[in-house]
Image (cartoon, rainbow, N blue to C red; front, side, top):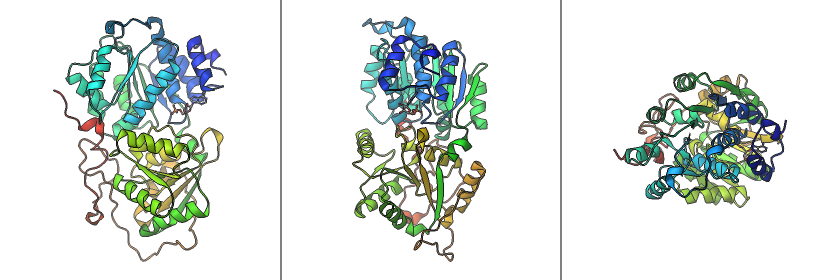
Length: 432
Ligand code: AMP
């Protein structure tokens, strides 16, 4: 199968060629013809499958006939809206739009929270056919009268499951209510939960359904190991694994921002170059951390799930679950960052007594037990009792945790507000 045979415009084929892509990925093969036909689409595909090009290429093609170089904003109404859960993903999606749309005179712009609204307002006023947005900030702009969706033809919900996880359901409903009924709707999600199906049945019309890398297949491509260890010895074990096995480019997941910061600082002290990336970091800080990690200047990137979500980090050799996620599906997202495109990858999980139930949940989702490997010198002490897990998610404004309610450990110094509640796209005042 070639990109040519998918019926894409020469302008798009040229841009794709310049990216060095030789063949379309499975999601592209399935999604592109359906989107070109104008069908609504419900696609199960995670990051790393090429899903972004899977919707961006046919979107550009559908909008191309009316593309123009006029300077008048009126000639550049919003014709497509792409909703994403995070600003990182919004930036990356828009980057893809620019990359693949390089030879088609369509304009795009991004709006997300956590940054000054005025430049975004200016860009909106100048006109852009393709708008990439996080839900909260989009509603801010709507409240300020900066948006007109009367010409909208296509809406894309990217990483819809994550948007629901982050508590954006009401925002999404409000946004969809602003759009013309006569439109094409595409929904991309790594999982097809009942909630996602409900969302789809409400907003999609007779959708075609495509499924790429079902959960289990994705997980099976990655060598997964659990290292049982005591809570207090996790850091020592991590440092030991990294140095003794000479691991490079290690993406480490923690549950909380505070935990990410602390671990990153401690690793640095251990002589292992490290950076943390999470929702409290400024945009330039996050971009710098990611760039340093990608080029190998930083050995370990410590991330929370939300910060890592949607980051374009390909084919990582090692992913470490320093703490297991509260939501078992997040485990799949995390390990999906390794072993991509047939390369070898491994996912190590450092699991302490507090996390046995989380591990069980993950194994239930995977429908298999993960191999356990006790590292010599780090065997857990069976006399240590389990403690409640601090999620860092209590009291988040509008965020919804699918995990069981657990008490925060007051001694940890962890602030009770969670990353979800603090998501920048949701904190700015609504201009209504
Ligand atoms: P995504 O799943 O959209 O996050 O894409 C994951 C990565 O795959 C990105 O770095 C893309 O540039 C890359 N990619 C997308 N389509 C192709 C393709 N057909 N061949 C090779 N790489 C691709």
